[in-house]
Image 1: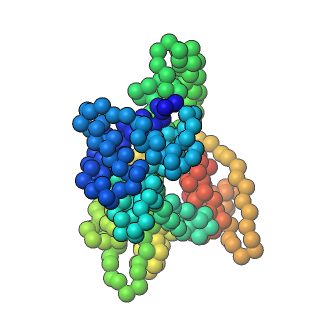
Image 2: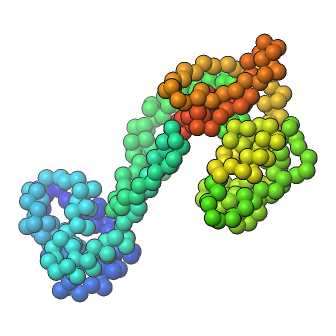
Length: 339
């Protein structure tokens, strides 16, 4: 028969796929073609611990697909796709094809959701695509690197452990972050004609000149956001800004009037650390714009009179706002510009 280990591996996996193997056994022989009948017999024998041979199904494959006529090794992944496709391709009646395609889809079909974020307009486009197989990395928890075990991998493992020790030592010397990774950004949008409340209840007292969240009301816009995003807005979070506004009066006006809202929350310890930390590390950024797009930052006029340049506000949909959005999407949180 030649090299058939690739075929045996795939057949063993299919035999252990409970839903697929069971449904295949329930089909009548007349509903299957040559490859389907051979696969049904073979999987039935494997599941009953009976003697099984790949000779029959290999002959059926070679008759339909010429590249299986030799005795050379083949790719197991390609064989799996060929087998699953052949179940329906062998049949000519549409109803029979549909039955076999649904059989394969119920056990193997999945859906990939691809989200594309536009850094300029901050809109997210979704694209869905069906798949029957995915390529995944093999976990290193149960096997060594490259799938090997034992002393063969020992020299490489020792080298990697030394590099990890060096990385850990270097990580200790890195500066402490400013807690930007703990900031929660909430995007809310009022829909015209639908009177759904924002659902944010605040404490009477402020902390660090920030409003303090008491709770989120159920069935509100904020509650819908938490369910979509999978993140929770817990009590005692501090509201940093709304649409770039940090003044309390301007924040309340925006919450009342604006249709689109970007709210930034942070835990109290993060805000306290920012207030107390006077040794923030500086960095440089390079921005470009067209003639109609604002840079997006406003300076504190009081600090400006004292000769200090302090960013008091970042305007939404500006060049600087787009820069921050890009940094967050790429994980460069230390290059974020905040008030």
